[in-house]
Length: 172
Image 1 (cartoon, rainbow, N blue to C red):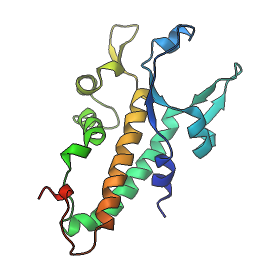
Image 2: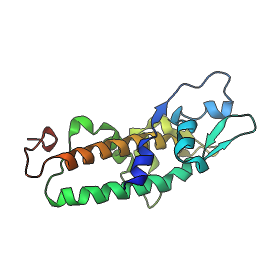
Image 3: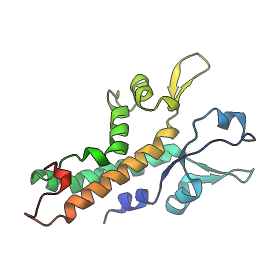
């Protein structure tokens, strides 16, 4: 069973404009992320209801499920890759490519601020010391969308009949 992939696929990355009455600290953050109620339905342990009644997502808690999803997708891709069946469909690779571009030049478990700024400039903030920092929670939505796109592509390759006609995904 592809449990992690199926659970993550139920989430969606979203963008929004903050309401004027939103707290200043919230408005200082990029309007990107995920819907707390959707996360709560899939990962209830990652959502807290604050005293003011608003729900808050533990974005860091999504790292482990996203890693498990990547592991599942890699496992599904390995036999297809061994058969020479995987290639990139540039028309359908936007979400995955943006995330991959932001992750390039990563250092261990951290991302390079300058690289992320080239791809997601809206996720760069200046801290109290004048240093650039990444609003990591803003990457969760694009990561989820990239994982879902990769899942769709792997599923399409898996559904292709053995020895069947190569599709447009193969670039031929």
